[in-house]
Amino acid sequence: MILDAAVDVLVTEGYAQATTLRIQKVAGVSRGRLLHHFPSRDDLLVAAAHHLATERIAEERRNVDWPSDPGARIDAAIDVLGLSYTQPYFWAATELWVASRVHDDLRTALFPSEQQLGAIVREHTAAYFGPDLAAHPLFPTIRDMLHTSLRGAALTTAFDRRPQTLTNHVEKLKRLVRELLLTDPPIQGTTQEA
Image 1 (cartoon, rainbow, N blue to C red):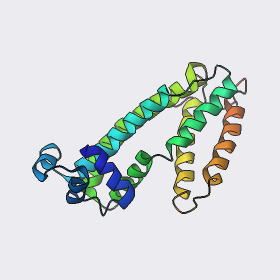
Image 2 (image 1 turned 45 degrees about the vertical axis):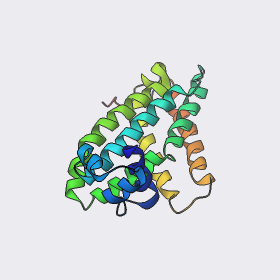
Image 3 (image 1 turned 90 degrees about the vertical axis):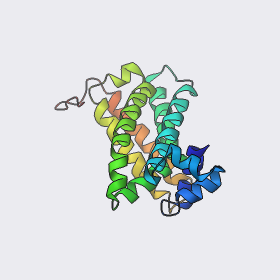
Image 4 (image 1 turned 120 degrees about the vertical axis):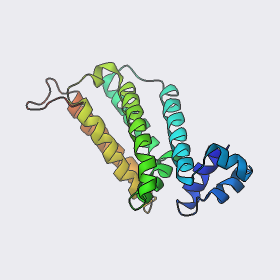
């Protein structure tokens, strides 16, 4: 209840308005109960964003009937990844990332959580693509570029809310990733990254 309220306030009102008093009011809990669980605002906001992201990422993986055809699997995986960058947990994280640029305490609280979440995202991305595609030597590079690219395209939707803004980008990524992962043998001169 407290974590959901924190994400709701963070997403709908932004970091500056996500005070413990505002979250307490939205959650309908006493100040003592809120502070008992989360002694600082930043700890609460980081925990809330991380909790929601972890929950939703696992849910996305379970709720897709993953195709066996490699090309269709690539398309389905990129569709799921693209959709993840439209969800409240992405916008909650974005609020925290931007605020942490100038708030050292928030950055200190956020960094370990983001590293842990990053590992979860990498694991689930590999599962979305399936073991055969994830074993491709280019996959680690493609995975990282997909997330960076989708994150950037999603940020554009903060001011350009046309549906095709992200959709067009997702379609381009599908074509590119099919070309890279379904090319046999892999392009010469590439190396596998951790």
